[in-house]
Image 1 (cartoon, rainbow, N blue to C red):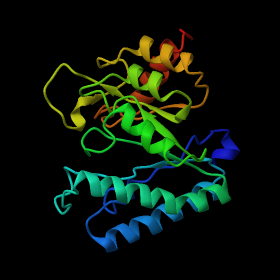
Image 2 (spheres, helix red, strand yellow; image 1 turned 180 degrees about the vertical axis):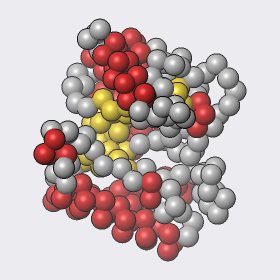
Image 3 (cartoon, rainbow, N blue to C red; image 1 turned 90 degrees about the vertical axis):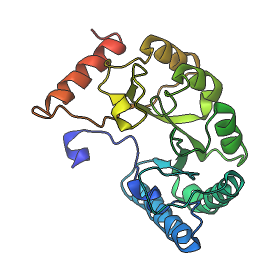
Amino acid sequence: MADQIGIAISGLCSFLFWPYPLTSNDPKLRQRGLELATLMTHAAHDLGVENLLVVPGAVHIPWNKDHEPTPNDQCDRRAKEAVGKLLPTAEKLVVYLNIENIFFNGYLMTPGEMAAFVDGFQNPHVRVHFDTGNIMMFQFPEHWIDFLGKRIKNVHLKEFTKKGTDYSLESFRPLLDGTTNWPAVLESFDRVGYRDYLTFEYFHPYPHFPEALIYQTADSLDRMLGRK
């Protein structure tokens, strides 16, 4: 359907990395997570999509009350093992495993850690899925972009506000309704030569007119990209 109406799909992602974390203390959950990630890789290939968003691990998953916190060293070891096992399939199917971090999962919390994780595989099929909002609580996306550079393969633009002390998903806002320095972010993307997709991710559509967010987002992107 996307091909018929001319909409490009920038990448594939799944919420299944959370109920079946690749770094769970439960071996059965880890194994099922690896099976599902392999199926995701095949699904991306079958859809003609080259980018797969991969959450490689989590020390903590706040909304999952059944998740037992994973020690940092074990999380790191298991995440590297899991991505290493996924790589042969990704290479064969020409799918990029793009690593994403989220501020509340306690793993890959600095650009240096992210770069070291990706570079450790020495494989072009392990890259970064960068989300501008996921590190905004205490850091700034423009700094990460400059650091990660060519490692970035796909991007979510996600608005975030630092005006409050609520560190839940409520901190994510519609575009231009937060505290992100978008001119600095776009200049950073320009500096590192990023020319691929910019996809907006949102959590809170307007309750009475959800379709209005589509127009607000399109208008905001036009303004950010200098088209208005």
